[in-house]
Length: 125
Image 1 (cartoon, rainbow, N blue to C red):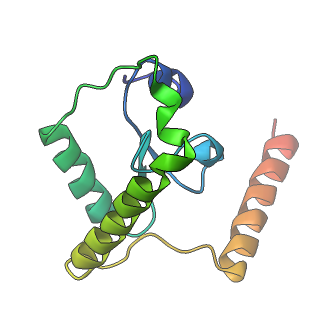
Image 2: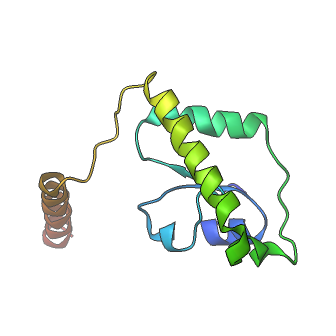
């Protein structure tokens, strides 16, 4: 799956690791058709990726791919989500946070940096 765009990788049955804040968030369902990263710490993300690689499930796209999205399957999905939240808080004790949050001040700073980079690019072409 390396080098494939995420949606194509999903269609091929590959597992995608992505931030839940990315543009892909509209298409991904963490814990079901993707694995989430970039929410707390890079060490936490690395541990999850390595654990996944060690226990690599062979995924394949099947005809019943959309069955997981039927209403009667909501409870098991919520159980998985709650289990992952519990796992996160257990692991959080071991690693410091090193991924900055998206507070209003940081968002303004990122917007200014992006705007300045675009301006420099236009001025110094």
